[in-house]
Amino acid sequence: MVYDESGVLSERDLRLTAALYAHFGAAQQVRRGKMPRIDDDGCHWVPVQEIVRTRGVDLQLTADEQLIYDAFCRSGRVPGGSVRVMDAQA
Image (cartoon, rainbow, N blue to C red):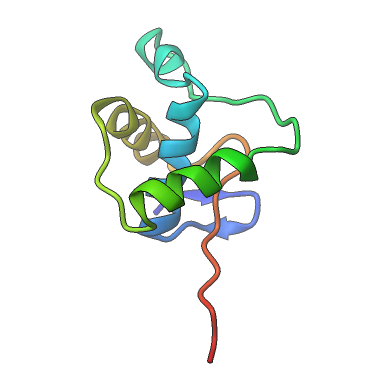
């Protein structure tokens, strides 16, 4: 299980979070042996919308995204913000 400050992340949330972090170049941090981090500018929803629009919410990870995903799984946490998918209720 992987946690953030709000609790356990679902598989979908974790994959989207890895995609977002990769969008901001966090794979370079992982390659240097550091935990992936992104600066919180409050506007991360913009690239998340683009990722979801082009790839959907159940996406396959790229090599960089997988690297970040694996780092999150090894540590059991996401050190910064994460993506949470809210399912629409009928």
